[in-house]
Length: 416
Image (cartoon, rainbow, N blue to C red; front, side, top):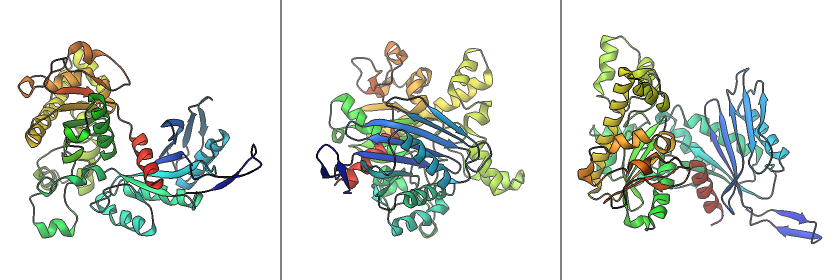
């Protein structure tokens, strides 16, 4: 994008084809998260959250990161358009308005891109239609993402809008990993296959791990464990995903905060026939009332560990189930890859819970995996190794940064 503005020091106009800011938007069903980044040094200029959109208790929290105190607005924010306009006003108050010629693009997190989108994409009418076509396989996420895109387009119709897809990193999975063993015609007719999610995190962490190890990512085989309230694992060979734990939806795979992860599909039939539960009730059970919260009533790993340390048997069982599932995936992905150079922990639990990291790899010394207790106990916001000095396989903690990844992919696309 090229814009022109006046430079008061030169008395004339200057080209702004070196616009260097990117606004990242993550629109949920009732919230909008945003970050403004300066891509010259990859620093954050401001962050914000608008939550409870449409309710009387709506709230906006805006934090300028280069001077200034956090500011909060309370009171009803009717819809996403009003939310984004309120965010734009807060940015303008810091001299970071959306009308600035320094703004190069707006990058949008879009959860589901299906098979069509394997890389960041400038949003056109046709792209937006395709995102809409994918709503049946992402009914909780894509509609909110679409609302955010349309609102941003209305505010800055002249600015490139870029979609960065959670599923894109996983489109490199081979067919034998992506296909479910069901009737092919039925699967194709309804787009039923394994797509995977958290792709921006897995992409970012894979690259940062290679930097930490001082080796080209193309040479490395790694298992990335994104452990937050939502959790996923990926097997990454040479920087390309060859397997991931989430599937058609984010429900499959690891035990999560409120999601069950892997269950026998016949559980759903059993609940419908025997318990008389509706499809919506089963959906709510598996997505919102299962996982850690279903097992022990808590989905905060810190609280669960506190309870475990106090001898709470229900919390201990929940923790053991969580760890057992992690170990199964580490073992399975070791087999898929054939050779593992690194196992990497990231996201809220992965970055901050030393007991989870230790327990997940305990007993896997035969795989070349071990955790150094002293290194594992260190708390840091920096990428770091927690394996012993002479370990055959590196074990690392690498903080994720999905917003920076979205900003980087967006900026690279519009400046190429």
